[in-house]
Image (cartoon, rainbow, N blue to C red; front, side, top):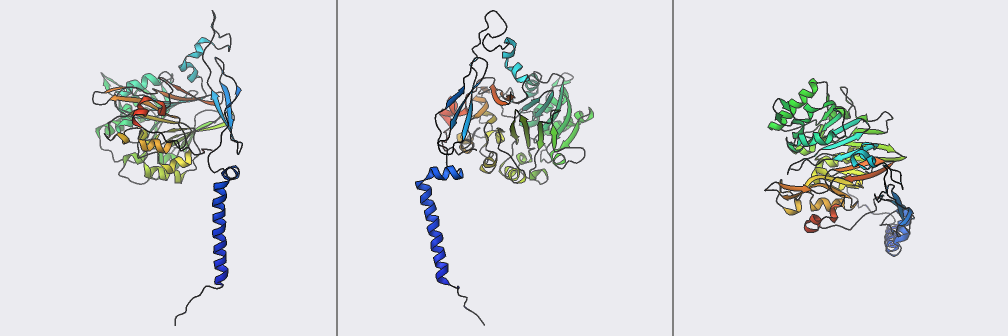
Length: 443
């Protein structure tokens, strides 16, 4: 026996649907007619900023501060006015205006005295690769050592300026590609091995949990790791760290006051196999409390779309003050899903801008147009280490050079060895990329 099921009270249902449609339509019209009211109460839509107002002026040695306010919701944005650097020393060693000593004007001296510094290194050849030095007091962390074996000498020369005791407390090898591990191996200089794992005493080495690598450089890397282990280095995988097993830790504090922590994040390819070697990358979050402010710095190696998706799903990620641009600024990384969560304020890209090392497609050379389009929604503060001028003939030059973010007096500051020009304001960008002005409210 069959029954015809009829809607009870069809007129009431129809009336409710009509009312719902009217409400939705009214909300849409209200949003169009009164966007400021919607913004004030919901935070949707972009701020309407006033002109900047100077709170404190900069002098030769002290930063100033200017602010602007949203005329709708009254949110305040503060911007540092950099010190002019025009000191007046006369015949003495101290500036008569701000009192700074001449010796304290050397960038290396200033950065060495910072509470925390994060350095993105140029690697001394035409190849794109990663090497990041983190310094917190007397504790140093090195993340990766690309791009080729001869980079080891360049890396050591730079690191020795800041690591004066010959000890790297922590080393992270994100994944097994040459442009991330070759400097750990280095070359033979007579009876001396120049590789980072041979040149320094390493406290703890954290490496990728999986790999498909069968290359000679990977074999040599494994030999270098065993050498470090024989010298007392504790060697763990990211998986062991995340699960706090076998003596490994998910969180390592870099200072005695426990205000700066290195945190190994989870992503599923610590446990699952993948055909994309990049997705085995170790991911780490550096967190700091300074001057009542919290700063977060994210490092994801060459993690790609699937790995980034897992990273975003598996961790309570904060908005970050600094993001090492994924996979050298490739179009295959720094995906919308991850960026929507971390909303980076500054992005450092370790690459040779415009290099044809991996592709000859102009839009996809590092940093790719797709990468620019996605990141530009959140920030225009994008910096790149190196500029490729002629890949075939091995000709390159510094873009920003060595990029250093450091915290001093509770404020995040930037120093670049060549210049601090934003990527979008460079001549290379004007000739090769387009800027997306569709900024979202990053707060």
